[in-house]
Length: 289
Image (spheres, rainbow, N blue to C red):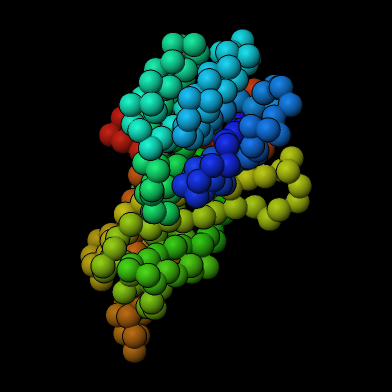
């Protein structure tokens, strides 16, 4: 499993907060101060260096650190972030470091000395997306494994939200025609979906140990299916329900369709086949399940 080391100098609130948010967002990861570093990156695939330049002495120390560890860092994926009261100093340091490390740097950027938590979190997510390297499993193999997993299960957690309200609903699902369907009498989740159709779904095995992890997180768009339409009737029949009986009920049953746009997978067994245990499948016209 890819792991990340976030190394920083505790100099200012933003630098420390940035490093903390990065280490959690990029996990599995470890965070440490420059002074705690003991000279080896061997346990990490990714390295994030957060630098804060407030003096010429700071500048020289960072450059010397990079030079001293260049041989090992050249075999890693490295992100460099730098802040300074003087953006020229920050840009100068970034250029210097990029010249030393070359192609192993996949992200480098100056960040403001004052950032709120939302800005910090968004930047961390941007770096996470850049670090992701999930192309090692062929898409056709991955989508087949995802589909087998979805068909083998029937219960999930459906997460909906709008404004500051969030709902996580344990619910049965039916995987059909590349979509995930839910049958429900109603509830708070519908209020969220009407306002914000973006949802997340989690399907997973019970935890036993780290060698048997298996779970899928799905991002998608939810839509209410028109009652007694062909699509509605098909879903109900697949569920073993009689349409005429449904029409005669004193209440309506509703159907939600979620069209997935991304699958994020964690299967420990992938490592037995020589693949990364974490994989991502983006849905498109070319790649469908």
